[in-house]
Length: 191
Ligand SMILES: Cc1cc2nc3c(=O)[nH]c(=O)nc-3n(C[C@H](O)[C@H](O)[C@H](O)COP(=O)(O)O)c2cc1C
Image (cartoon, rainbow, N blue to C red):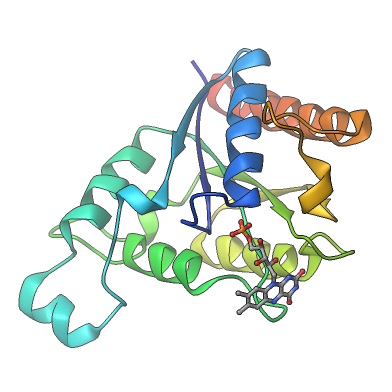
């Protein structure tokens, strides 16, 4: 089974990016994959600090999330945009996940994984600038990031009350993206 881990770089209860991540997880399931949605609110981690790491090692929630990622071949990251950048939450989470833990190299966890990046913003560009940076960060970690991506602009009007999209175009683009991710992971791990 193709397993995809899905999370958003926002912990906010009403986060548009969490909504988008949940929809991506549902879409992966529809494409025949198995998706695990993770709310980063449930994995609080201290701000990365080398002294803290030296004194106490990788924090428990980072270790739990590393174990979860190890069970998934694919990744979907919904990346909100703060001042044209990815959020500190997303950067901090990925920084902790990239740290070695005991015998295990941190970066080995990311190698061979395939990802897609998506974003949503109340603004007119949908957080597109954060997508380029989230993509770059994942590539730096050794992840293969698919060229396809989705930025949902005017997010306050883009989602309906049931958690779906108001516009069919967004739904189609998200389904296409998730289908391509499931297919790519499937091919890589089958062959
Ligand atoms: C510090 C800060 C900076 C922001 N900068 C941008 C920005 O550069 N571009 C943008 O589209 N939205 C920006 N926003 C608005 C966010 O896109 C908006 O708060 C969004 O709802 C955050 O994602 P979430 O709904 O998933 O929490 C910013 C918000 C904050 C708090």
